[in-house]
Length: 529
Image 1 (tube, rainbow, N blue to C red):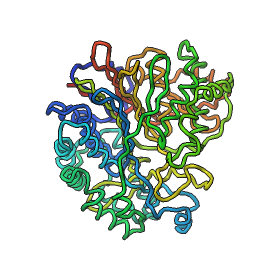
Image 2 (tube, helix red, strand yellow):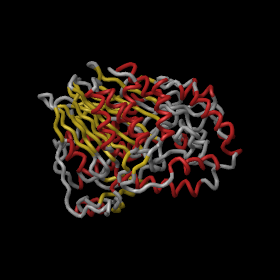
Image 3 (cartoon, rainbow, N blue to C red):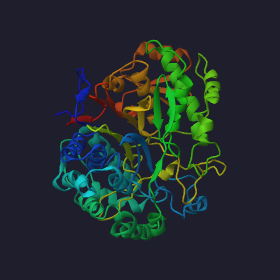
Image 4 (cartoon, one colour):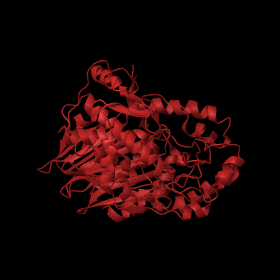
């Protein structure tokens, strides 16, 4: 059969539930979350069960060797978490040049930072869960050891990764184990990942400590030492999960929350802050034009100023200052303008949202970046390390300049909406620098246009790329696209739906019902309890 042909309109409605809901990109992962809820777990237990299962069934977008961020309404208030790793202490511009590179490579050991995912799982379960980490990881372990069916979108990106790493292995010896561990797949194939299962068991039994100071840490550092890596035991042992206060902005009676830098969530907040006093009619060319110009303004600032907060020269309060955002809004005219910003690379990420009957709601995101990440797979562990260090700047005057022991500018961002200080719900759109653009579009769909979660996700999307270039989906209204072109935007149609991000939304209605939407552009799924 043709796994990729859907010639007829496929419309799904929002999903409604009373006791619990999980929404993400893979059916087996959503079922894992509901499974632990039925065992007495809460929204956090469900989130981590889902996240762990996603490392198995969708390794094309995330993994044990990646980073994680979270915003959650737990036990009556909002919490934020940053579990992004720092660069190896030995990393420097001199080291990069010594190895023959003029910029940070995408592959191999140099862009590898300390992985944050395992400690994020353990910390969140210990602080907020009803169950143990061993109970929560059980569905993921079962999927890895007993096998799972490869879905079409995952198969597509898995094969693309195999082709990519096959070429890159000629220059990066350290990524050759990836080819043996993951290999090639096709849609509908049953796949097992036995080493991945063993690693998850080790993480479950040691409460995540094995990755940072135990047997898994020893394997990581041994392979690093053997193949030219910079990671050390000190780097792993020094990693800590940071609880952070979400940064927020008021938008038309609601509060939109994001994680503060080193993440790019502030980009979405800045754009929304510029538009909060505007009244928009239909989703027409004027609305899209102002959205695009606002996000361009925001990127011009955040790609310049956002970095590890210990190294930022401009504060978050300055970037979100109401007078500053109004001044930036006043710069937006009726024609498109060129605004300076950094290059925007592609990415690979999973986002999930969960909610339970106690009122808890979780917005969670994790990523290896650029698909499987660096391509470095630690032998006999079954997991790849991320390449988040690729985001470091090579400009020594930039706040995000490459250094040892530093967190890079980060793309992955969970979102959360409240109203009057009470939870409305988690939302997110994954996909590198599409993420704040997706947050802007989905938040406005929900608030300005009163859309239900599924419609807010299904609405056609645009994506600012660079300069004056803007891509639109093939479902985008061609008359509006032509009107945007007349305003000076260089419009092109991208036929690949996954280029426009993959989102999830859960909203708690006034009577307490959970109302959810899942991404129609990929293998999206909602499970309810």
